[in-house]
Image (tube, rainbow, N blue to C red):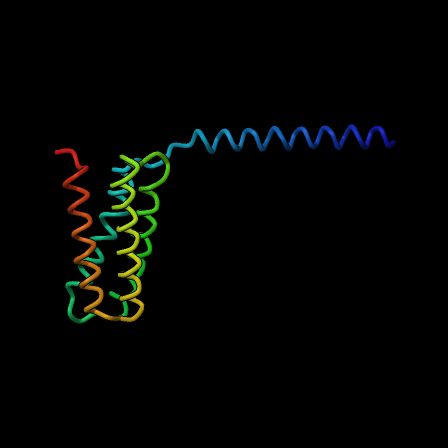
Length: 140
């Protein structure tokens, strides 16, 4: 009985190792989003929403709520632009991506405080970073 229990434990352990190996291979084989896909699905829509919210003088609860969601997505997109082999270089690209995250966080802070002036400032800084990055890295 003891030998059977040991054999069964060994077989189950080997099966678990195989399953873990297959799962790890699938994770590495999964395609990551390209820079263009991150920009089109996350960064651009989220930044546009921040710009629109900053331009509205009267912001109701729904505008603040949507702006908050957009600021969170924008910060996450900045993080994604630094990972998964997306960085175009190891200096300026990372600096601009970090600036994108910092400006999204500044927008989030302004949104949570419902401070329209601070949101305008964060939006303006965000625009400057976006433009500088596009000027440097976008294919013309």
